[in-house]
Image (cartoon, rainbow, N blue to C red; front, top):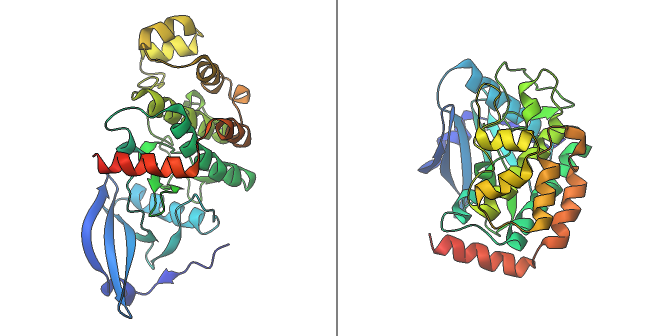
Length: 290
């Protein structure tokens, strides 16, 4: 367990808020600067946006998970407020994976390099009994050294359970595995389904489907669910090579056990990835062109 502690109110009083980095329904993320010994330290503060129970549970759960995990590709929790309404996190100045595909999709080798790092973090988490539960482009950050960092652990679980259980379905629609809508989902393989969705978006520029919520009738998901892949590939009109197609057929299976594990997918991406130098060059260029 990391030695991460609740910070006194005086710490937060010394911070200068610079800007809002992001804002959602239940939380907002602020860039804050601490001037200490003539050195400016930057933090990302994730704070409760509304005083409602679900928001408080999300932040409390995230703290309890991040206290127990530490990995080069997972956002670092540096501290938190005594009332659990604000997390002090490592600041990642280069945004999220969303920024990288604003102009066009990524080549497979670049996308594979990014997700090689993601699956390293997931393999570590899954081996420790943790699952993320809300993997998506906007929850994957790029730090100052152009390394990938997973963030937003409000739906994370430890051995299948949240510190405080919630009634809402975990994850973000369009990224979730089909079993997430059932009573006993396989959270580890649900994470892997979400990674495949992210990979699909990175190399095509669009999602593989809009929703697999059984209350909806998404035409693309219906083709996937019913194994009508030949029709599906014609319908989406994206230039995907056969090896990637085979991977998506396996990873989007409605049978969780058929999907690759984090370690297996990590090895698949390892064979496809580019050099770290080339990856950084591409990231820098994409961010500069925004």
